[in-house]
Amino acid sequence: YVRTALLRVPVRHLVLRPEAGVNHGTVSVHWVVAEPTGEFAGAKKELHEVTLPPEAAAPDATTELSLELRIESSGPEARISIGVRDEIGGEAGFGLIRPGGR
Image 1 (cartoon, rainbow, N blue to C red):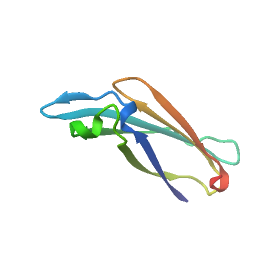
Image 2 (cartoon, helix red, strand yellow; image 1 turned 135 degrees about the horizontal axis):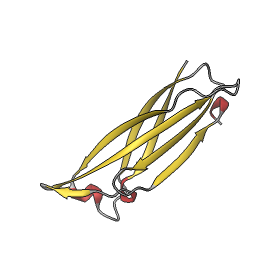
Image 3 (cartoon, rainbow, N blue to C red; image 1 turned 60 degrees about the vertical axis):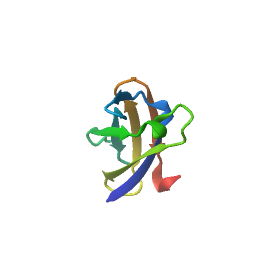
Image 4 (cartoon, helix red, strand yellow; image 1 turned 90 degrees about the vertical axis):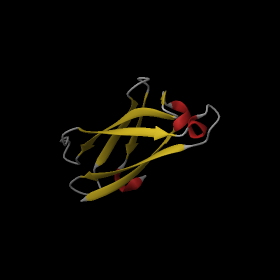
């Protein structure tokens, strides 16, 4: 069973480094699946490089970074914990996908 999760990260919360007229950053996405039996599937991690023009990374910008994850589990009753971390700034946010998408 594969579930697709779409994450939206407000760019204004990321620490970006200016270089050659654009802004660069890195976010990591971590997730783990808790199966209905109580067992955990191995933790997964993806790194995503971010490159944005200066206007998209301004402090008042409303730009969102969209990340799509394909998460495998035994079925729709699994719980999925997701974390997103700004690799430069060190800030992180977490979420939970409950059974049935609630």
